[in-house]
Image (cartoon, rainbow over all chains, first blue to last red; front, top):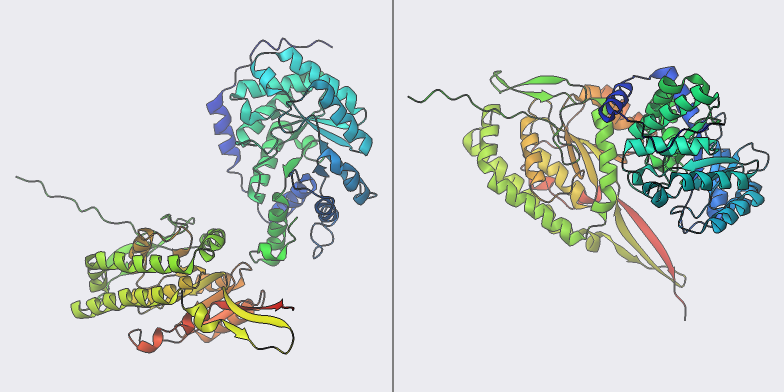
Length: 299
Length: 289
C-alpha cells in the first residue's frame, strides 16, 4: 500500500467548515423521525466511566444500565459498548455476557499516552487478554506536534498489532492539536496506520469533541474511503451531553458520509451523561411531558 | 437650534438565568395602560421558554439551597435596598396602569418592607419549625426543613409589583428556586423588578420571570416533571384549576393555592408562606451508652 507524504499539509477552510456545520444544525428533526434518531443515538453510545474512583460496583451498575437503559420502556435498543479502564474489563465482560454489548477499554497510558511504548503495548495486550472487544488508544501528541509523524504512525501500527482481533479506536485528542490541518493530518496518519475508528478526544481535555472538528475528521474518512475503499468509523467523545447535540451529529454524519455510516459499527458517541438525556427525550416524545432526572437512574 | 431628540425606549424582555432574552418563539403581545393606550410590547413566552427556564432553575438549585441562611437573608435585604433605589422607576411604571401617586408609593413601600420581612425569616424559620422529637427508643430524633426545589408560580394578576414580590420572597427565602409567570395584563413592573434582582447578588437562575398567557402555559407549568411545586394566588377558572390538579399528580407536585384579596393585609406575610415550600426531613440518630 502506498502512503501519502504526511509532511504535506492539506489545507482546511476553517470558515467553510464552521458555516457548513451551522447550516446542518438548522435541520429540523421532529416527531417520528426524532424518535428514530433518539433511539439510533442511544444504540451508538459507548457508555463510559473513566474515573480514578471507578470500582467494580460502579462498573456493574453501568453495565446493568447498558443492558436495560430504562426499565419503564422495555423495547429500547441497548447501547453499543461499555467503555472502561483495562483493570475493569473483566468485570464488564462478565456482566455483559450474552448481551451482544461490546466491552471497550482505553489503553496505552490513557489519557496522556506519556509512557514508554513497551508499557503502552503491555497495557493494550492486558486489556485484550482480559476480553476487551475494542481498544481506545491515544496518540503521542507531543511527538505529533514535533513533526515526528513517522513515529506516531509506527506507534499506532504497533498498537494495532497488539490488538489482534480487537477493534482499534485512535484518539487524536483534537483539543491539543491546535489546528484543523493537524486534525486532518492526524486522522490520515491514524487511518493509514490501521485504525478501525478515529476518535476526537479523551474527555479529559477541553475542548473535547466539537462539531467542526468532527466534520473535518468525517471528511478525512470520506477521502480515505474514496482512495482505499475501506470504511473507517468515527467517534466523537466528550462534551456531548444533550439529545439535541447528538441528533445534530447524526445529521452531519449522514450528510458527509451517507447512511452506510449511520450504525454502531461505524459511528459511536463517547459519553456518560448523554444516555439519560436521550432517555428523557424519548419519554418526553412518548408522554408529551418534560422529564426530570429524578426519575432516571444515575449511571 | 437643538434638533428634536428621539426617545430611546426600553425593550421589555423576559428574565431567564440572569439574562434578558426574548421569547424563543419570537412572539410578542401588546400591553396597554389602564386607559387602553398602547404602552409597550411584551414577550409572549412559550412552552420552550418555560422548559429552558426550568432547566436553568434546576441548575441553580443546589447552589442557592446550600447558601447559608444568613447569606440568603443578606441577599433579600439587598433586593430591598435596590428596590428603594429604583423607586422613581417603579413610580413611572405603576402610574400608567392605574396607580395614583399615593397608591404607587404605598405599593413600593410595602414591597420593600416585605423583602425585609422575609430577609429576617431566612435564618429563623428552621429554629421555629424544626424540632427535636421525643421518641421511646434510644434515638436522637429530629426534624428539619428542606426546600422543595423548583417552584413554578403564576404571579397575581392585579398586583403587579407588591403581589409579585410577596410571592417570590418566601419562596426564595427558604432556598427554593422559581419560575414565575408575570401578570398577563400588567407585566412591565415584573421585568423592571427582574432588573432589581439582577443588581442584587441573586444568583442567576434562582428567580426566572416569564411574560405571556396563563391559558397557554398552565398545562406546561403543571405537567413538567422537574417542577416540584406550583403556586397561584388568584381565583383561576374552574377548568384550569382542575387541569392543574390532575396534571400535578404526574409527579405529585405540591400545589399551593393561596387566595389573596388584599396584598397590604398583614395576614399575607407569614412564615407559613416559607414553610409552604419546605419538606420535613426527620432523622433517627442512634444514641448509645
